[in-house]
Amino acid sequence: MTHEDKGKYHKKHPEGATVDDELRQEILNQVKNNSISCKKAEEIAKELGFGLEETGRAIDLLNINITKCQLGLFGYGETKKVVQPAQEIAPELKESIEAALQDEKLSCVAAWEIAGKLNIPRMKVCAACEALEIRVKPCQLGAF
Image 1 (cartoon, one colour):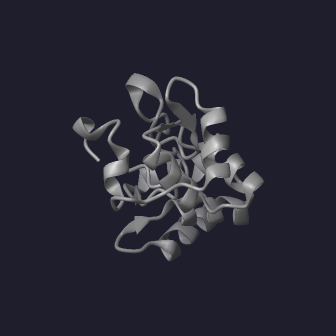
Image 2 (tube, helix red, strand yellow; image 1 turned 60 degrees about the horizontal axis):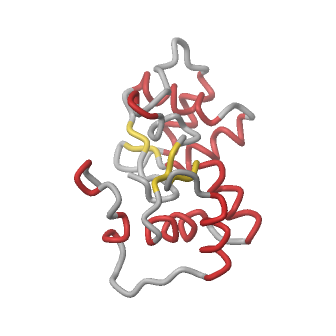
Image 3 (cartoon, rainbow, N blue to C red; image 1 turned 120 degrees about the vertical axis):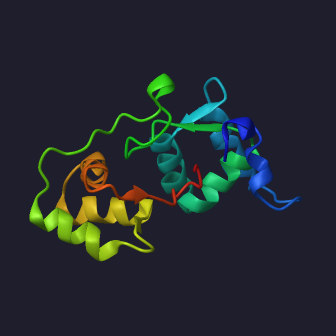
C-alpha cells in the first residue's frame, strides 16, 4: 500500500468481508491511537486461536495501523524501520535464509521459522537479510 492509502486498509479486501466479533472486540480493546503492535496482534491471535493472516485481515478491516514489526521493518515512527544490516552472518543462518527464498524474497513466516529453528531473535534474521539485500515479503499480517 502507498502512503496515500494509509487508513484505507479495508480496501485490500473484498467488499462485505467481515470480522469475527470476539476477534474484533479483543483488537479494539488493545488499540492505542488507532495502532496495534505486531507483537500484540500475535498475542491476540494465539490467545483466541486465530491465524496471523486472519488477525491481520481483521486489523485491516477495522482500519487500524500495525506498528513495531517484530522483524524491525516498519512501524517505528519517522525512521520507519529499525533493523540494520548485520555485520556478520553465521553460515547456518545464511544457508537457512537462502534455502527458504521464494522469488528471491523471504516471507515473514519463513523468517520467524528460521529464528525459531536457530533459537535467535527474529530481528537478527532480518538483519542478515538486510546485509544480503534480500527483501522480506509478504508480511504474515498483510501489512505491506
